[in-house]
Amino acid sequence: MEDALSIPPLFSGNFAFFFDLDGTLADIKPRPEDVFVPDDVLARLSLLAKMNSGALALISGRSINELEQLVKPYRFPLAGVHGAERRDINGQTERVTLPKEVLIPLEQALQQGLSSLDGVKLEAKGMAFALHYRQAPQHEEAVFALAKKMVEHFPQLAMQPGKCVVELKPSGIHKGAAIEAFLRTPPFAGRTPVFLGDDLTDEHGFKAVNKLGGVSIKVGSGATQAQWRLADVGDVYQWLERITDHQQQQEKALTNRRDGYESLSRSI
Image: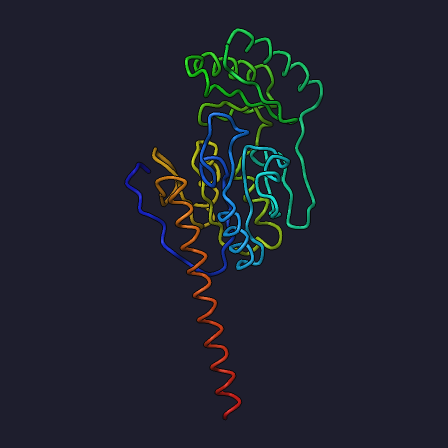
């Protein structure tokens, strides 16, 4: 789907919510460590989670440890490194790892390959590596060539392009699989998924959500498999405010109807 997508409607019901972070809940910054989620947005996320029995998770290329710091003081289910690590609502964490015989030579080869590419940053995530070239866009072609070479040499890996970054991660790990894993466990099981994301890394999530009859929302421009679109992070904030207000109004109306029925029953 191209840019001509509609703004997502308001809805209420038995839904589970999944959010990417960078570029969706937070503006992208030149340095990843400068990214933050505003306090009022975190409060809205917490409210939306409470109104949906806790069925709200963040799914990001960042590690779980990074996500924890960005959402303090709140505690949500999290999927880090595109789902290579996942923490459920009870705090139980699952991780997919690469063997040392892959990790060590891979990191050494990446360091050597990037040594002549000034401005490209290598981020080691334990079970994956990210090659950031936001500060050196002139090296994009060389970064992709290096990543492709690593995938050819290490068949356990998959290459995941993103905004000014290429990641090398365990094969079969992506945000769609992370969403599906959450939906197999409480409080997500039996609910219709809603996923918001902005990057190429989120397309696996959109595909999975569409297959499950859910709601997929692309943030920003560009071709996508998502069904709906929000223009930017600011629009995400407005949508989050509107959807929480809408669900609160729906819940209040339901409570009023229930109280009316009970009052009528007592009078009869």
